[in-house]
Length: 349
Image (cartoon, rainbow, N blue to C red):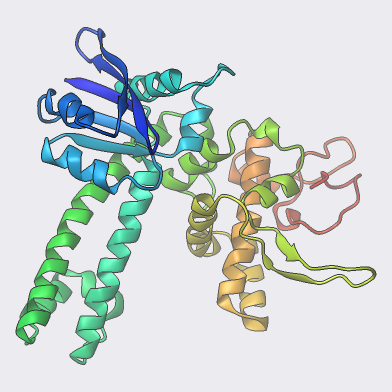
């Protein structure tokens, strides 16, 4: 089988191909998107060739072209791919070679591709929910059970609505299949890494969140304080201040949207497995709104994961620890927040 790493640009792409059996380099060139170069290059490889590319915009035409030749497209997050490269030199050929090498080693980060498929699946499910509700069937999550599927298939619909229902069900089956295969790959990758296994000891943190967190932030030493990590993830409050007036708003949403969305999803499960987070969630949900409370839990979850990696402590160990002047790096879980604290009892951040 042939694996091709592709460093994609609007005007062209640098490709680096490897034969998986012999390890021989079979392609190393620049391909312009004008003319017939793309067709000539990809048309020469057998169906099933794996093509890896960093996730970016304006790729739809390229995806369709590869599908015509029966090739398999693998999308990866650019930031996560860069964390795999230890050398500081960066150029197109090295980027393409890195993608090909990660594909061959089985460590290519497919999280972003899975993330997009999951969002597409959610859109399909929402449309099917609306079809059922328009027929007086409000089943919520029960719609995705075996009985719910039978109900959807038997709904008496107008011809065009019935066709739309059938198309959506077919797409849902395909997306479920693809998401399951990607989730298995993510789970295997997370189980093989020590930091990911450590993070998964926290309630609500599974293979997807743990692997995404480690690959997104890179080396934990990059962040001196948890406040810096919170800001990087866009979970810090926005600010509109002038003079003596200080006004804080909702979260800035200026950071990594992919990881922020995963943390908010994980927060819904974390509150069911952690008493401290559950109390704080219910208190804020009653005072303001559940959506605000979810974001608060996501922020605290990010801070906890920061300290778990920083101290190499599991969730249970972190809960048992107490802050002290001799060990300021670890504090009681309930106090892992962003409120100002005494430097003798709590780490900065």
